[in-house]
Amino acid sequence: MRLACALIASVALVLATEGARAAPVGACGTQQPFAGEVLHGPVLDIPDASSLCIARGTSPTAWVAVQLPNLGVTRSALMAAAFGKNVTCLVGKDLTARCIVEGKSLVDQLHRPELVRASTAWR
Image 1: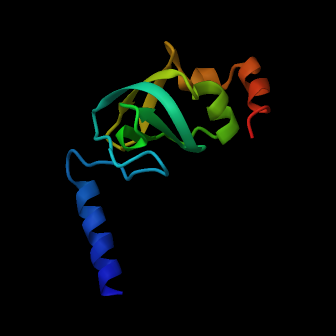
Image 2: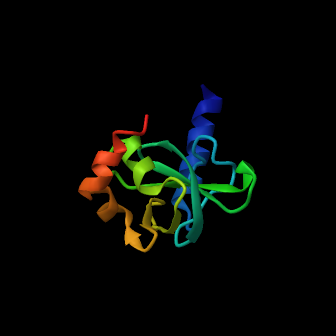
């Protein structure tokens, strides 16, 4: 119990400091973005409906996990909008990223009717 409390306190301290880094997501490797960082590269994994893995190299260990704000979409919709495409993401102070996919806002992309239809093909 003491160890768990100490771990929680340590994580809270790290997140409260300037330049805090987000926790790694799924199979995205160990690189973590910091507030204010701009990331660019292809999306090579989408672990869930709230995160993307941006490749900074060929090995998954060089991929960076970015947390997205609550977009209210499914993983399938994110797959249709971003998988295999180049993105540029700005990591905010809350450590969530606002992303541009091939020159257009990810949020705007997610609401295009053709993308909504395409998302049904992703499992």
